Image (cartoon, rainbow, N blue to C red; front, top):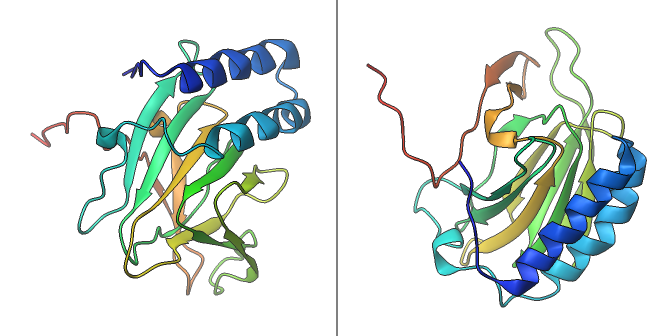
Length: 195
C-alpha cells in the first residue's frame, strides 16, 4: 500500500530523505544524522498533514501510512494519540526517527528482558513539538509510548528503516518479559477477514 499526499512540504521531505537513503549505503549512523534535521524541519510546521491522517480513534492509537519506499528501505507514518492512549511495551527491529508535531508524548525505554523477570525501566523522555528522538537495536529499541494529555490529541511523525507495518516484531509483558510476535499493519488499510 502506498499513500500519495499532494503537499509540497511533505513531498520535499520525501525527496530529501530518499536522497539520504541513496547516499548512505545502509549506514544507520549516517541516515540518522542526516535524516534527523529533515524530520525536525517537517514537524516544525503543523500545516501539511491532511485531516484523514490526523483522525483519532476513541479507543486505539492510530498508525497511518503516509509513504512507503517502493524498495521498502523506509516508511513514514503518522501516529495519532487520542487522550490518554498508549502502546504496549514493544520493539521495532529497525532504526526509527520520531518527530513530535502536535501535543506531547512520553517514551519509556526498557532494557532487553531477562527470562521470567520484570522489564527494567531505563528512563523516560518527554517529546514536545519540534523534538526528534531516535531508536534502533543499536541505540535501544524497546519502549512504551503514551500521549501526555488526557484531554487532547497528540500527533507524531515516524520514519522507520523498513516498511514498519509489514515487519514482524515483538510486544513484551511488563511483569515477565515474555515476548509475543506481531505485525502492526496500518490504520488506513483495509482489514483482512480472519476466515
